[in-house]
Image (cartoon, rainbow, N blue to C red; front, top):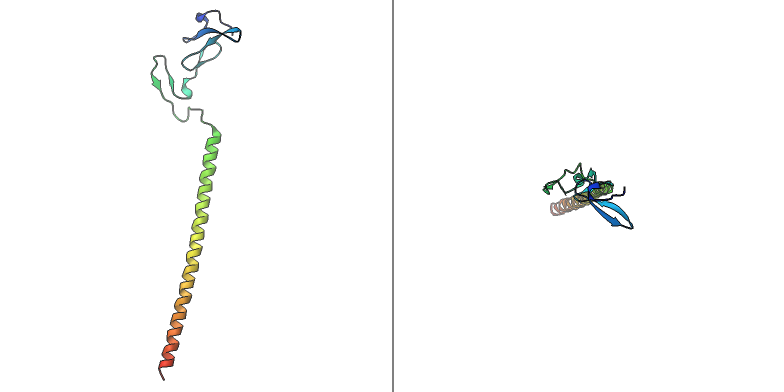
Amino acid sequence: MVCNSDKDCLNDGVCIVRTGRKMCFCTKFFTGSNCQNNEYHYGYGFDQENKTTSSSLAETNFPRIAIYILVFFLIGLIFGLILHIRKLFRKLTEKNQQLRKNYQMILSHESSRKDQILP
């Protein structure tokens, strides 16, 4: 909407000339053709007394793609940790089997030596 003076603009808006036409320039997070919409609740803004106000996460316009990226990153991290733990258990099992095999060889070698020593 075209404004003729500052009185046409609401909420301390100022009538300015931009690109060859008059329009309301809104301040304090107000939007709309006449600065009628109060949009300060989308983040940190200022109320009418210029006091800082904060908003909760549910009220903010947080991009959903960031949430999806975070969720997929966490799923990938958990999946990677599970695979790494399985790999460590496999190595531990192989090492345990090798130690048992060596222990059996030592026992059989000692028993054969006892058989050789005793007549």
